[in-house]
Image (cartoon, rainbow, N blue to C red):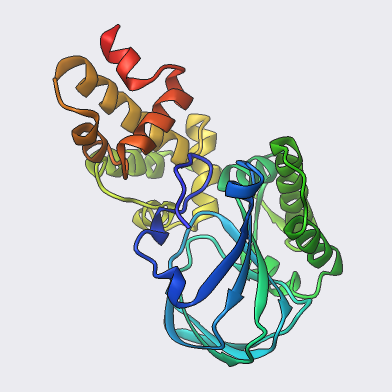
Amino acid sequence: MVFDSTRFDLQPFVGFDMDRYVRRTFCSWEEAGWRSLLVQRFEHVPVVEGMVLPGTADLHLVVPVSGRAEMETRSGGRAVRHSWVPGRVQVNLPGHATVRGYRGDRAMRSIQVHIPSDTLDTVATQLGGTVDYEAVAASAERDPLLVEAVRTLGSSSVVSDLYAESAAAFLATHLLTRHGPQRTEPARDDTRVRAVVALMRERLADPITLADLADHVHLSVFHLVRVFRAATGETPHRFLTRLRIEEAKGLLRDTDLALAQIAPRCGFASPGALSTAFVRHTGARPSTYRNS
């Protein structure tokens, strides 16, 4: 479930025992080479109790394609009952960890889509505001166009990231314009942004999510992204990655530490994750940078 990517916030899934709950039958990342949209197909076990789903920055869409179940989802102490029914969309909100339980039949299958936070951020900015994502989740449930789009993506054989990028932009635009009233936030001093940057520097080596940053300054994830981008020109995720890359550059330049030692000091899960991000941000491999 976890991929080395600067586009998706999937680190919260580290340690998640996926095999206990589902069998993955398709992954666009691995089988189609998509990097702009993550589409997966799953077969689900029929009975689950106390499954903890971590909160990520990505907007997560789930479309059941077979089976039926009565589900209970708990977030922040509040339990909501709902039905697993083919053709209905479940929208898992960014930054919301949930605990889920259900009893269903043995034919439960789904298609699930993760839309990257930076795609949503870009679309929201172009639309001139932020969106009430709780309204999106409530009203998108019976959207036939959304269901058909997710079904189509789940059976696509197109091996092109341009296709995936276009699909991600379409889904984000449709969700934000069709299912959520636009809201703008009055201008404020950027003390919240400074507080977030200070926390980033303090916890540079630690796993930290957008939800952690937003909680620190008492904002929703998407309010934080909008305020932060207005002040810095970058999303929080990209800004944090850049801080980590700058720290890695200093360690590569001034120490003899191996990449395996540098990666955790800079908040990367592995040397491979550091190398991928380093190339994306600097255009050079860490070894090339060090030798130069």
